[in-house]
Structures are given as C-alpha cells and as structure tokens.
Length: 240
Image (cartoon, rainbow, N blue to C red; front, side, top):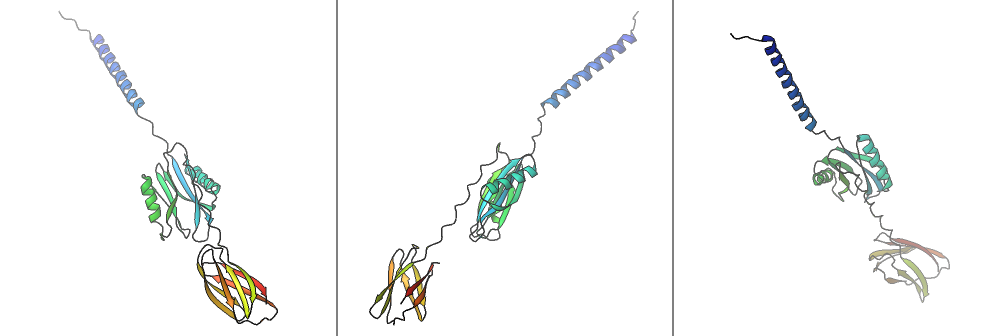
C-alpha cells in the first residue's frame, strides 16, 4: 500500500518557489548593479567683448565649463573681461558639445555649437552677415576636465603714423620748405598756406625741398598745413 504525504509535498513546492524568487532577485540585483550611472551634463559657455570698437574691430574671447548653464555663462563673461574685453556678452552655451564664437572687422558677433569642434567653428563664421575679417575668436568643447585656456588677446592696433617734419629756409626770391617723411609710407602730399597750394610726392623715409618762388617777404607769421594721402598731416608756422 502506498501512503501519500500531501503536507510535505506542499512544503516542497513552497520551498522551491521561494528559492526561485530568491534567485531571480539576486540576478535582478546583479543586472541593476552592473548598469552604469549616467554622467552629469557639462556646459561650455563662450563670451565676446570689444578691445577696439573702431573698424577693423578687435575682440577678446572668454570661455568657461561648469555643471550649470548659469555658472558657465558667468565664468565666460569673467574670463572675457580678464582678457581685455569690454561690454562682454555671452554668445553661446553648449551642453555636452563643442562651441565657437566668431566676429568680423565690423564687430558683428555670432555663436554656434555642434558635437564637432571644426563644425561649430565653421557654423559660427558662416553665420556672420559680412565676411570681411571673419574669424573665430574663441572655441572649445564641454568634455574637457578643465576649462579651455584663455585666448591671448589680439595685438593692439598699430600706432598712428607720424606726420612729416618741415623746416624753412629763405632763399633769393622766395622760400624753401624742407619736408621729411616720418611715416615710412610713400605718399602724395599738398602744401597749403595763404595764397599757396602745391602738390608733391614724398618718398618713404626721404625728404623733399619745396621751393616757393617767387615769394615776397611780408614779415609776418604764415601757417602752413601739409597733408598726405597716407593719413598723415603736419601744421607749422614760419616767419617770412
């Protein structure tokens, strides 16, 4: 005769189910533990400011990377001011990407972003309405461990050219004006005073003797203005 034990069979089923649930929980825990945590967003901000506002305009750039848009933008403005920029403005903020800010000879400013740094730079330049002097002022990517190094400020504009010097010598029948170039640029000049208007060529770093003959001495001061087409001029006074 066969004897059945229903209670024991029920216990075995419950034990097997519990073991299966425990194993499933362990596997699920292993899967969850192996899933990588999502990296926090990184923001890069770029700013531009004026160094010289007269065409051709020169600009300074600033950049910063931070975990928030606001901090990145503020850091870029601070960096821009530190690089010599005035009236700095945040041009672009990119999230987990690259960015570029561009300008031209007239002070137009644009900003663009893209996963590719080269593409961001190209986009920023192409957005300028006038391409004269178009160039990228500052660029970078948000994946750097530290902010990109600040851009070196553009070189200062060249010093203005000096006007010519002039000295006078009385000669028989008139006057000689000895005019010497100091600009280093050949030019066409005019000599103007009361009743006299003469044109002459002035070679670079050379001198020219302009004879004003005939001229009758009037024993008074004469104001002479010499203006050249290289942007220089000189005003002098002579007694004759």
